[in-house]
Image (cartoon, rainbow, N blue to C red; front, side, top):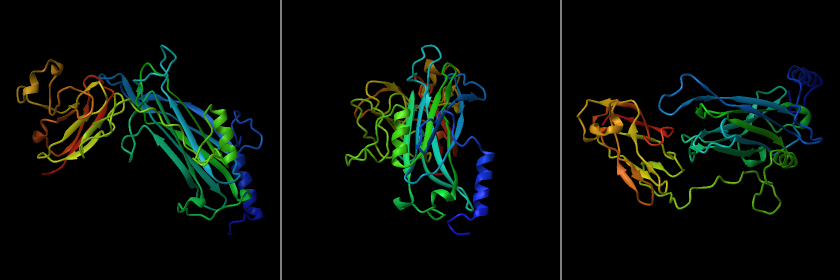
Length: 336
């Protein structure tokens, strides 16, 4: 079948839409705007962590809209709201991931754009606390390869917007995620206005181009650290929270979170009592951690060596900050 839908395919499209009706959520009251928006609440799954009072996060949402043209894009906002104060909790983990899929009659669904914020495992990603936000656009005209030809509007059954979170949920927060997907610049403008966001600006003065205002960086925290180091820059976070080492490696922790004390300490892995100088630290009454750094005050050039990895067998080891237990990362030890 060609790009243009046949009469039978058009009937198929109507059947698909009927099965997924209503096509757009009740919140979409914008005549002529091709976008959808909705929310979901995040909640914890599994046992509550004794250390930091959080649970593995879960939450997801979905909305549908129609296709009117390119560009197509996504916008996501995640806010960890305290159930006590009703305000954003700046110590609560935050993460949002949104995707937009194009469903063309006669072809497999095609993901056009996605964005994610708050995941330090992604290239350039970093931990977020309190709020996470992201946006992205996609188009056949951007040079990104697609597996189906550029469709006409009448060939598209529907546009699907999906969002979820992986943020750990504090027991005293009720996180809410708002997200939406749009088709055409005009729809993006209306979606942004509906979500209380400023117009997009791509630098040419016409207000287009996607993107959200950057979340504020911590003042005075230079992003300079030794290569391969564990790094803190974001307030109360590990911006680089994963390392791969051998037992002979020298792993450095750089605390660039200006004026705030942090450390890197094995979360569960232990060593025999009295086998290292830090075993006598009163913080470790429940067992001596396998590896450790002292607490160091954040600032330019504030670094220390992670001690004890020479005793580590190959495998994955979680670590945390003893003053800010929501801060987590991992070290993978490989053979020498």
